[in-house]
Image (cartoon, rainbow, N blue to C red; front, top):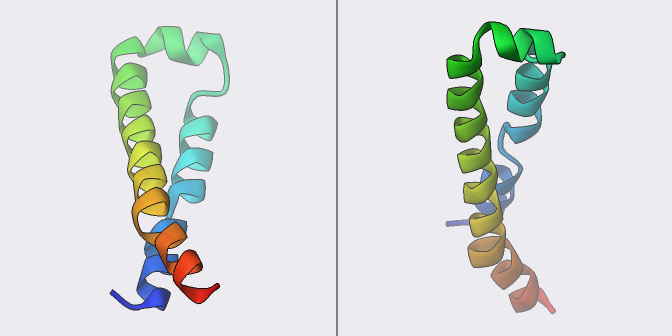
Length: 68
């Protein structure tokens, strides 16, 4: 994987996905109205965040260390 691929993959679309999530669930009332979907989407967002952190720890930081 090239350094550009690593950086692009790490940056990914997490920000846009979180902004969409936040926009969909702006209040306790919106969450209460569809709690099942909220739980499911929350799990998806958290799994995406975990994958990003894992990639940063596994790929990005190794790349940075190799450049120093």
